[in-house]
Amino acid sequence: MKLKFALCLLLLSGGPVFAQATDTPLLIGGCQGCHGASGQGGHGIPSIKANHSRDEFIALMRAFSANERPATVMGRISRGYTPEQIALLAAHYARPQ
Amino acid sequence: MTLSRRVFLSAAALPAGLAAPNLARAQAGAGRVVIIGGGFGGASAARFARDNFPALNITLIERSRSFTTCPYGNLVLAGRRDINFITFGYEKLAARGVRVVHQSVVAVDAAAKQVRLADGAQVPYDRLIMSPGIDLRWGSIEGYDEAASERMPHGWVPSLQPISLLRRQLEAMPDGGRFVMVIPDNPFRCPPGPYERISMVADYLKRAKPRSKLIALDAKNGFSKQPLFQDAWAELYPGIIEWRGASNDGRVTRVNGAAMEVETEFGEKLKGDVVNVIPPQMAAKIARDAGLANQSGWCPIKPATLESAQVEGIHVLGDATIAAPMPKSGYVASSHAKHAVACIAASLAGRAPPSATFFNTCYSHVGADYGISIVGVFRPGPNGFAEVEGSGGISPRNAALTAERRKEHRQLEALYADGWYDSITDEMFG
Ligand SMILES: Cc1cc2nc3c(=O)[nH]c(=O)nc-3n(C[C@H](O)[C@H](O)[C@H](O)COP(=O)(O)OP(=O)(O)OC[C@H]3O[C@@H](n4cnc5c(N)ncnc54)[C@H](O)[C@@H]3O)c2cc1C
Image 1 (tube, rainbow over the protein chains, first blue to last red):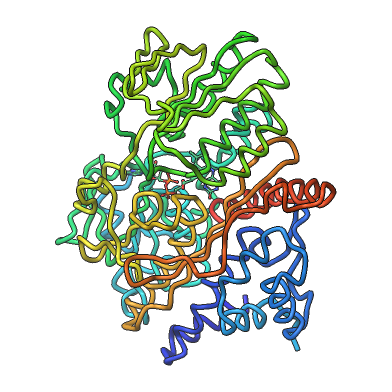
Image 2 (spheres, rainbow over the protein chains, first blue to last red; image 1 turned 180 degrees about the vertical axis):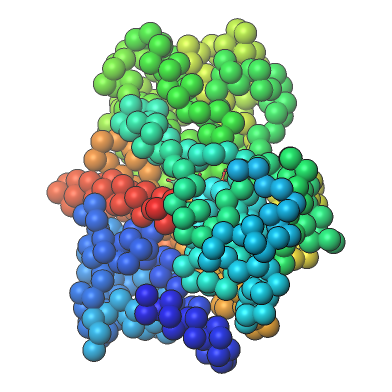
């Protein structure tokens, strides 16, 4: 809801941040396919919704991409995203700070 | 639910909550977006637009009243899911404010920016999204036409032929019978799909008709997740499956529906008790008629925005496009959908398109509690699209895992497949 509201404001105010604001809803598409619309998980797929701090989220993704943490698909997935994209995902899914 | 011209011209006739086109255009980034096709690309686009870009006025045009997914169709074939489980309606999308029109689009007039429906109504748009999926190339295998497909079902386009036809034939097959599968060359819808189907048919045969055999005749020499599938077939279904590639005379050039017989390139004739022919494919008719396809039969697109490379103002998504190395998958179609909608919203607001990252995970069920996957993350590249280096790929092979970890890995991926199916269908129709 918050996100939608922010997007509306951006659409209306029309600042140069627009591209960044649309990046998050686009990026999370890669997560939502398995973790669900809000990251809630299910069918044995862990919830990623407000489970971690931003730093923990980023560290987790790094560990996946370095194969330092056992995974089924997350190693293969995490290596596809840039550090900036991971930071956006962390900001979206992490616990409010 | 027939839509008349009047509905589009009269603001009073619009459902509450949807601004009339003229009013809508006054808002920043507003505009009329028409979407052709309510499958993986189209339904995902409609939902994403409603959730994220309330200023867009969305009309979804789909010829069928319900949508039966291809994904999980192979589990229906195996008797592991019911047809109702994979069939969805459009009511919830409509309740979310998408104007859903159940009509066939018969013509696209890109110059006048409107599409014509089978009932004669014209639907104007500011931006058009087309995700109409595929058509089968009837006759490209000699003798394989619509009539022959009643005897030798394809089970590849649920809106043309329900998977239940093939399921009935499989159930009626005698124990000790032969199931013949004919598989096309690339590109085609769902690269791992035929091999998931082989697995699921073998799963059924092993349980219900253990003396039966499956022979798969393939027009190519390699396929998606091949080592994983072949490891699993040897492990789970020894003696049931025979797969023949092109260099082993696997290419079928002719079929005889009456005789339930297929003929290979080098003239071998094979009879089946059930014959499943997956023929070569191309972009759906409306995309070809609209001038979106090139001589390959598929639609070239601009990688940064997914706009047609041939006709302006039309974004093309999903299976109809030329988007290799992205596979023709439902998840890719949904990834395309979100990006196209965001590009449209940006362009209507006079801004540059967002940067593109496309995503795919395709799980395949190989047996009960046995799943495998392929992952891909893609960006626009110098020529078309490119997979992000170092990312993606297939599940580890058996040899790379301890016995214990292997069991867990395969079980988890089967479970995750169910999670994926729930999430993606909920996103489209929930
Ligand atoms: C056996 C099988 C298993 C599969 N498993 C998976 C899987 O596990 N994961 C995965 O990601 N993908 C899977 N796929 C692939 C997936 O089904 C397709 O990639 C996906 O459907 C493509 O989406 P689309 O929007 O391009 O086309 P579709 O989903 O086919 O949607 C096209 C829609 O457009 C409509 N339409 C066409 N022309 C018109 C017209 N003129 N007017 C109005 N409406 C029209 C059609 O009725 C249809 O509903 C599988 C496919 C098969 C065959």
